[in-house]
Length: 265
Length: 330
Ligand SMILES: Nc1ncnc2c1ncn2[C@@H]1O[C@H](COP(=O)(O)OP(=O)(O)O)[C@@H](O)[C@H]1O
Ligand SMILES: [Mg+2]
Image 1: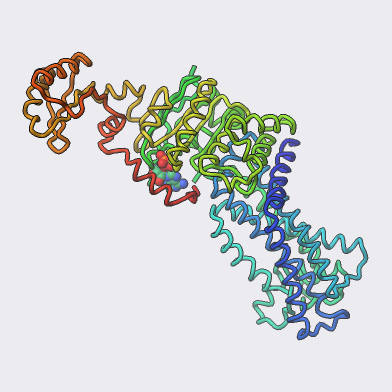
Image 2 (image 1 turned 60 degrees about the vertical axis):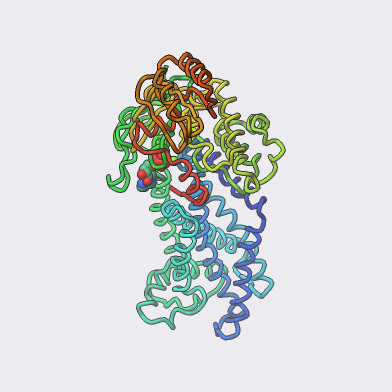
């Protein structure tokens, strides 16, 4: 067990070392969400009336945080598919290490990357007017929630990456999956403008419950279109937790099994 | 003692429609080199992956260093080294980073991992490039680093899957040198190749495989003998062909082959150099000066052709492999 953890940390360290060797990766994966913050803040910010003190940016930041960590799924899938494609997974599997180490190490590494990116976005948000009002403990809790959500999504990415075994396929497949997920939600605009069936989907979408939950934790009252009365909109934090537990309970064992048989087909 | 035993391995893909291994059996004596020789698609990678615990066969059994590969894969992984057909090291990291990472994953202490990395870089002439990303390495350097990574724990059994495919002649020579050194140190090696001369050069014994089965095995010499003994070959000017045929008939007596295009006359001989000397004497007496004269033993190409009914096609495969680059994700 101790070996499994230290093995996983070696894999995580490898990923951080990669960032040190090719810093462009870190720079661009930070610039992109920062750019989103600025674009949404100044492009939509003027035209969406939120009735919220401090304006659109208060609602936007939790939305864009959640969107960004949701994309951990893509990062993990692409990274593992590349390792698969290059035969690195084969080499790892021929080593006397725990079957969980490589995939755990990868999800941890992507988690660390998320911390850096969230920090950069938070600072940018603050510069353009984001003022969470709930105090340091709640704010920390909010970021913890975001980190956990990214971690859960990362495990979905593990399974996809190991299954498709091709970097470019992984890239395309995950973007197609994650983009609608993040837009069919309350992240950027009220769900009340959507057709009824979509509203229903948006309400139960884990991205929406995460966004609503984070808005609460960052001290906002208005959940931005989450119509009161349904279970997920009344209990976004609880619902988000349930989602994360379900995702991890399903995808962690599946991913580890997939890794163990990675090339049996 | 046998360091590797594989018995009756069967592996199919795509629900049985592709038979990668069709009852393959082989073994490797401890401290020796077995060359598994076969054309592309013969099943070489599949058998290596099974022995290295990466893949389970549909049926059959295997042991490595006396350990059951199917029942006890974790133990097998502690005693093997694997260097695959596609160099599997992290390209964004440096050679040094890679060796340290793999050393740590083999549970060496930080100090031991460093010590071993220094040794291996030295052994494989990579010390000067240790701090460069693998991305910037030549194909040959990449392969050497990959091989170094598989030697970190001084494995009892080493598997090398086509270690020189895709390398230029210079890279291949270097790699052969490196492998020669390893073999001297007493490691048991199972090496696959599509190159006949490579098996000839590196292996103590050769198992020729085709369509997932071993179709012949033995030392390179015994395989060649299996195909036929020595042949006397003489190349002369066209106008002398008839006269020389007479001479060869007196020395050899049977199955004389005349190739007018090559201006070559050849025939099997049983008396070796005696036949050669006699033929030379007779030629000299008649004042014929051959363009070339010699005893030829069959090449492994001949072996392959006579065993499988098709040539090894290694030239063609090489082009295909280079063209496809490194993207053969399986
Ligand atoms: N993952 C796979 N799916 C389907 N067929 C495969 C797979 N891997 C190998 N094969 C097939 O199995 C046969 C043996 O392949 P392989 O062991 O890679 O041969 P070699 O290494 O000798 O070139 C080939 O016909 C190949 O196409
Ligand atoms: Mg192969």
